[in-house]
Image (spheres, rainbow, N blue to C red):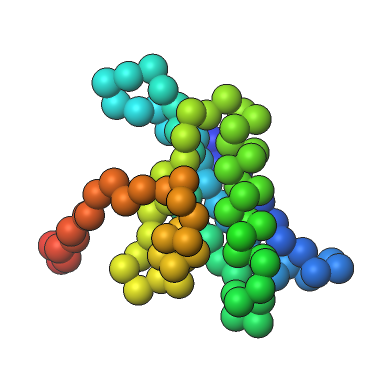
Length: 102
């Protein structure tokens, strides 16, 4: 992805988590927003502050780039659901159904 960005969480010089995201243009408007492609935190660090710092860091970077808002794409069984549900500034916007075609 040409416009993708990566935000890293480090412990000394070891990567313990990352967020990969892209800016997108909202259809039928002039607004730009960010959306995640991948959020990963090493299992050892998932219950600490690392996930929250990756979320906040990703959103702050996007805000500095002039993006209007951020959409987190979250799998149904992801622990990220709990993290986002705790934050009052987030709202659930949609449910996406998928079907394998091949």
